[in-house]
Image 1 (cartoon, rainbow, N blue to C red):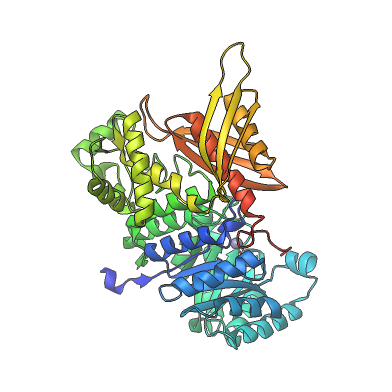
Image 2 (cartoon, rainbow, N blue to C red):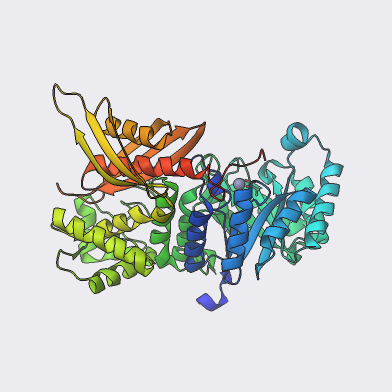
Length: 519
Ligand code: KIV
Ligand code: ZN
């Protein structure tokens, strides 16, 4: 079978909607636009840009993404089965060349009884009315029976049939609570395909959550059963344990095209940079052994594996690192490399920087080259990621000094530049030098926070390796994440903590508002 006669699976990315619902992963509009740009370049077919009724910030982000990228991908807005939700979605999507409204209503007996207090008849009536209303505003309508995987199959068939008759062009089958197993989910999709009389008038889609670690397996099982759209997120971000990871779904379909007889429109060489971009923007680290995009995904440790690899890489490698744009630790550049060589390398690593950002990262590179003899691809990626979203930061570090040791009180002095052009300097003591820096940052910014998570990892190996620090802080009951990188881990910690505080600060600023109404 050649690629030409394979079915194409529509990749529907919901990083900016379901992914953003991960605790501590909220993004402001500028950050969402940056992710949307990367998704368009990755080749996703549909971008679910947000839930316009949820907050003014969500509305604005959907509107701007629709304006900017609505000619390069379908831009989708989520709506409950309520008139005002659908009107908000339509308004936010007005300027998109390709718009989709995604309407959902729960159908399982548990949700009907405890959440909606509606019987089956009312569910059908509301579905039909609201899908018709959405259809009167937009041709491209997706309907999701929420908690479909726990819905009685005969009722699910009935709802899906009525939604299609009312105008739905995609019927998405969510496993909202990650309850399904691959064989079970296959049966659900197969049953819809065999028993819903008008099923050929719509695309069947899947939306699987990962509570049992089965989201990708369930999505692939649905593809085998006839689903032709998969909803997923970069790095598997999403509510609770997350959604199906886009990179895993795409590479499974690509690597096992012989079996699935399907393909996608994704440019797989952009998977690694996109995954790292989302990780830096959200501050959510990628686990080392994460499939496809983790640091160890292409590392071979056992001698027998290394021996096989040297004979022929196909012995232990089912995907080539370059197929996913993987950044190894190749020695690339040194102190004397010029701007051109640096720019070429940044571009070949999949980063898309404007001239100003490139110059900033080049200066960081020169500084790093003074401290570190050998600079690897992973170092360059870390430098680029370290600057992602910097231009929107309220506070930046101008300088800092720490003193610590045995029999001395750890003390930090920090000087910050503020967006308003002022410098602010203060000092504090702490349990250790990092604690002292964090306390000083809180004093200057006036934001108090509780450190919830603190992790350090080496970007490469070696004594002079850069350290990457990831933090999660709790401020006003909400989690904010930040990452920082430097050869000095106190500096990396300071940058990470300040990034998280900047995110908390942004919540106060109109347009940076990511707080949601109770939906
Ligand atoms: O998990 C879910 O059911 C959802 C729907 C809104 C599709 O996210
Ligand atoms: Zn979901």
